[in-house]
Length: 161
Image (cartoon, rainbow, N blue to C red; front, side):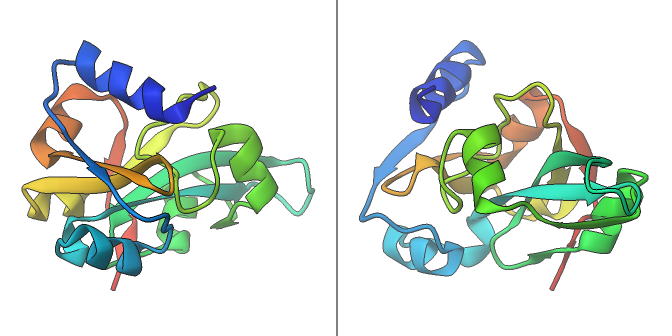
């Protein structure tokens, strides 16, 4: 699976204009924002989160959480929204197998039907969102409104300062 081209096709199919931003490989949101020359609050940080429902190791589910670059994921809020017991970052191996890219390159879209998306409502404070597009050396900028209007996902307050 080529995540980058899947994103391009998805945006084209949805008639969403975008700006392609090539840059040096970088997965850390704060550094990537400096390299791409934009405010940290415009970055869309996408992270695969493991939600556990009991103490059993196999009683878990994954969700893709998207928050502004200047905020952190509120794991308690994610667990509560998913009716889970607790939540934590997924392992690097889980990111590879479920999202088909490396951590830091995860886009705000899920191409895995078993991984729903939760977008933080505070993303709407910025008129555009910029994200790594399945690769550490390629980013895309789109209007935040288009992201919220065109794609189905759960929206909630899942970030904190």
